[in-house]
Length: 443
Image (tube, rainbow, N blue to C red):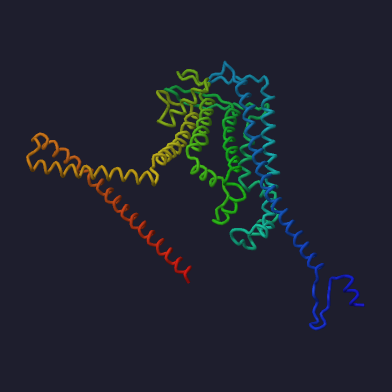
């Protein structure tokens, strides 16, 4: 009966001599199908992990985009509410349509804040699913058990705000002119030994701070570059480099120094400080500079960055002086990066250095031969006395720089000699290899 059961099922055959069980083709196919299903599940987890990566990157970008778009209605509200009768001591505003534009500003800002919630949820889910991909994609380094537990643990609600500097983003998105709120601020100041009281609105200061939001938008755009994909994650894991915003900024500054300097640092800095200068200097109309024009503010900041102060005028109000102080600090960063960029542009490549040394050495050899010929002609009295005197003066002034040039010529000559010797060794090695191959063929 056992034999008939085995024949009918074809799954287990008894070996009477050894007393052991042998699995036939049906059991092997079942095992293979189980392995293939398990492999498909692992591949699905890897795909799901990549989808989560793209999802939280998109949610973070949309959050930054909506927060930055809030600047547009805030600008319309500021420009439309600014009265032509406004002076340094007379705070007058036009409230028509102001509430509507500020309500739109509130809507965009709150949308940006609310999108931070699904962004952090997708981000922590992406971290939790990451250890499940280790079987299919072996990590570059062996993580410890505590590292895996840290990735997979459930986060507390407070960690959603603290991680990835989310609390700073929320604070930045909460700074904007609120609907129906107009708070006056009076700043006492002395100008030309005369006491003044400068009148501002708190909402104008909040409007100026809103222009920090495009910086966050630019940082989120870095997530779509070559330093923030699946390959970059594995390379960073190999070298134990953390995924931070500063790593992306440094990497792109090394990769595209001119573009980063101009579009990220220079343009952003000028626009931000120009807005602040216009907001704080606009109502002071007894000075010669017309800050009603935004172009004037841009020009003053531009001159301030590359010099000290903007022309014949100086900032009048205390807030404007603080803006100029910040722009001068920013200018030191811009100028240092400009010098480094120019130096890298003017740096010779290795091939250009070889050509430069060859040209200099050839020229010095020619000058050396000419000096020997001229000295011999002087000894033979074939040169006039004036030419002899001029040659001595020329040689006197050339003697100081001749040492450096001769040193570079000697280095170039030594490099050429070493390169020739290396080439000869390479030719000898190739010849020996050919002889060995022939001997092996004969054997």
